[in-house]
Length: 462
Image (cartoon, rainbow, N blue to C red; front, side, top):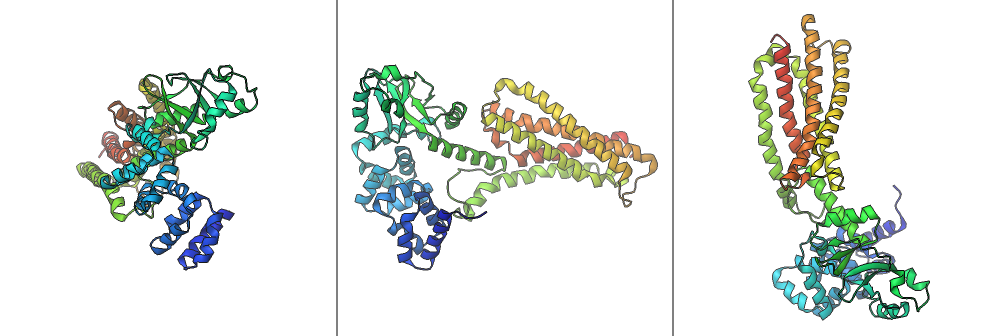
C-alpha cells in the first residue's frame, strides 16, 4: 500500500531523529498531527525519543500526551516540572485525565491531583467514583447544557463562557433546574432561529441515555444502534452527569474487540494500549502461558483415548489416516460457531431466552455441513483413495461408512458445543469470550476421537 504524505513525513521525522538531525526534525514536527507525533515517539526509544519530546511546543503537549499509551503518558508527565505538568493536566480531557491519574504511582498521584484547578479536581473526583469499564468511568463532564426556559440569546451567552472547555458543542443538552435531562438541541438550531425563540420550542425531547454504572459495552451498542454522536450519561435519578463522545466510543470498541480476540486465543491478564513491540517478552509470556499449560494437560485426554483403543487402531491401521481430519473438522466448526455466537452476543442480538433457538439453528448448520463433508470423504475413499492406503474389499463399505458417519456426528456435535459454551459461560457470569477457541478445539479433539473410534468398533469387525 502506498504511503500517504503524513506517513512519509512521520518516517522522515523518525529517520532524522535516529540520525541526530535535530534541525530537520524541528522543521517536521509542526507538520504532523499529534497522533502522528505519538506514533513516531512510540517507534523511537532512548535519546531520540527524548529529543522529540523536547521539540513538541508546550501548547501541543496535552494533545500529544492524550494520543500515547497510558504507560508512556504517565512516564512523560512524571518527568515534567510542576508548572508544565499543571498546564498539561488542565488541558487534557477529563476522562483521559482520570485514566492518567489512575496509572500514576500512588505516591505521585496525590501530588498531581493537587496541581489541578478546583474545577478539574471536582470533575476528576466525580469520575473516579465509577469503575474504569463503566459508562461513568468513560464519560466526559465537559459537555454543554442549557435550560428549557432560556431564549436562544440567553443560551448563546451561557455557552460563550464554557465554549473553550466543552469537548462537544454539536449536541447541546436541555436540562431543568435540578439537572434532569429533558432532551437536546443542535448548534445549528441556535444559529438559524430568532434570538427570541425559547429553547423549549426547539427541544427534541430525546432522552435516550445510559446509566453511569452501566457497562461501557452497553453504551457503545446504544450509540451504534441509534447512530449517536454522543450519549448522555445519567445518575439513578435521571440527572445528567456527562456524555460519551463518538471518539471515546471508538476507543471502547477497540478495547472490547481486543479483549475478545485475546480471550478467544487463550490470552489472559489485563489488556493495555501498549503496542506489540513495546510490550515486554515477560508480559507476553505471563499473559499466554496459563492457558497453554492448562490446555496441554487437557490435551492428554486425546492421547489417553488413543491408547485405550490401540487394539482397534492396530488391526486396521488405515483408521489413523482419517483421524487428524475428523478431529480438525470438529475444531474448525466448533471455533466458527463460537465466533459467530460471541459476536452476536457482543452486539446484543442474543439474550438468555435464545438458547433453544441457537441450538436448533446450529444443529441444522452442523448437520448440513457435516453431511456435505461426510459425502465428500466417502466418495474420496471409494474413488480417490491413494493406493498406499490398503483396505480389504469386504471392509471398504464399513470403513467408508465409519469415516462418513464420524464426520457427520463430530461436526454436528462440535457446532453445538461451540455455540452453546459461550451462552453457558454468560449464564454463570463469565465473559463469553473466555470460552476460548483453544479450549473448544481441545474439547472437541477428545470427543472426535471417542466418536470415531467407538463407531469403528461398532461397525467394523475389529
